[in-house]
Length: 615
Image 1 (cartoon, rainbow, N blue to C red):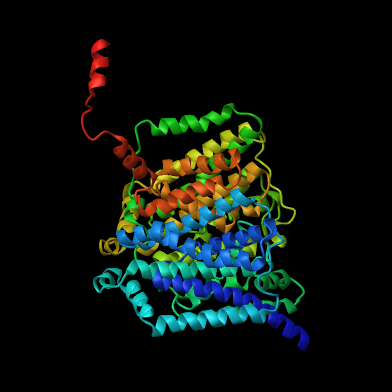
Image 2: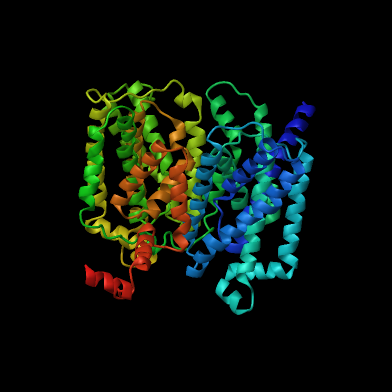
C-alpha cells in the first residue's frame, strides 16, 4: 500500500508541476499587463505541435527543436500578441471586456489554425522533453517560481511591472517604458505556456481542442492565488495534482461510484468551480465595451436578404440540405447570447452547456430515460426540456449578481466546463442515447420548415425582451449598472431574468441541433464551442439579432464547405482586431471604404483630356 501511495504521489507531482507552470505563466502575464490570457492553452498546444513537427516530421535533434520552440517561437508569439493585439487595447484604455474578447479571439484563431495545419485527429507520438520522472518537472516549476518571484519583488523591473499594472498612464509619466514591460511579461508568459505544452503532450492526446482546454482547466491554480501569489499557485497546483492522483485508489460500489470517478478525474475542474465562485474580487470593472454592444444600424433590405437566404435551403437536396439543417438551430443558440451579452451586458462563456443540456434532456425525455417522467413525443420533449433547463440558468445568473468583468467570465466558464465534464462526458448519462425527430418531420426538408418556425418564435421572444420597459431596463443595466440601480432598476432580478431567458433559448437551440443530427453528440457542446460562439456574436454585433443569424450561417457554412477550423480562424482574426476596430467588422469595412474613396474631385491628365476630346 505504501508503494502504491508513493507511486501515485509521484504521478500527482508530475501533473501538479505542469499545472504550476501554467499558473506561473498566467500570473506573470496578468501582473505585467492586467490580462487573463485565455489563449494560454492554445499557445501551449501550438508549441507542442511545432516541437513534434521539428522532431518527428523533419527529423531534427530534440535539443534543436526544443530550443527553437521554447526560446524563439514561444517568446516571439507573446511579443507579437502584445504588439499587435493588446497594445492597441491598452491605448484605448484597457477595457477588460475588450481584452477578454481579444484573448478569446487569439485562442480561437490558434485552435482553428492548428486544425487547418495539422488536422483534427489526435497524435500520440509527441516527443518527450523531460523524462516521466516527476522530479525534473517539479524542479523546473520550483526554479521558475523562485526566479520570477525574486525578479518581481527585488528588482527594478519588478517595481516597474507593478507600477504599469496599477496605473499604466501614471507609470509612463514617471518615465517607465510600459510597452517594454508588457512585452517582457507576454514573452515570459508565452514561454511558460510553451513549456507546459511540450511537457504535457507526451502524456495526453495532442489535438487542437483537447490540450488547450486541459491547460485552461488548471487556471484554477492562478485564480486560487488571486492572480498574485506564485507560492500559493505552486502549492495549490501540487496539492490538487497529488489529491487527484490519490483519488484513483478509491473504488466504491453503488450509485456513488461514477460520481467519485468523475471527481477524481476532474479535480482541477472542481477547484476551478470553487475558486471562481468563492473569490469574486478578480476583475471588477464594467462587463462589456460600449462600442461592442452599441446597436449597429441595420442596412435597408438586410432582413429581406436574410429571409431569402434562410429560405434558400428549401431548394437544396442531399448533403447540402442536411448541413443547412444546423443553421437555424445554431441561430437560436446564438440568440441566447444576444439576450445575455448584447442586451444584458453580461459576459457568458457557458452557453454551450445549456445548449447541450437541452439536447440531452430532449433525448432522455423522448427515450423515456429521464428520472421520474414517462416517455413523451419528441416535440413535447423539446418543449419540456426548455422548461427544465431554463431554471438552471441560475447556475450562472446567481454568481452574476455579485460579479462583473473577469470574475463573471471565470464563473460562467467554470460552469460550462463543469457541465461538460460531469454530465456530457459521463457514460451513465449518455451511453446508448439516440434522438429522433418529431412525427411528420422526419425528412430534412420538413424538419427545416419546423426549424424555421421555431426560429421565428425565438426571434419574437428576443424582440420582446428588447422592447418595452424590460428592454429599456436591460439596456440601462448594460450601459451603466450603477446608474441603472440608482434609477430604480432591480438589477439582481434583471440579471437573473437575462440568464434564465438565455438558458431557455440555448436549450431550445441545442435540442433542435440534436434532432437535426439525430443523436446527442457531447463534442458539439464542449466549452471550446462556447468560446467560439461568444466571440462570433460579439464581433458581429452583440446586440444584433441579424448578426447572430449571420454568425450561425458563417460558422456552419465555412466548416462544411472547407477544412475544419476555417470558421474558427476567421472569427479569431475578427476578434483579435477588436483593438484596432472596436466597432467590429462593420467599422473595419467603413474604414477601408473611406481610404479607398477619393479625397477630392477627379482631375484628368492631359492624356485623359485628349482621349475624352476624341471620344
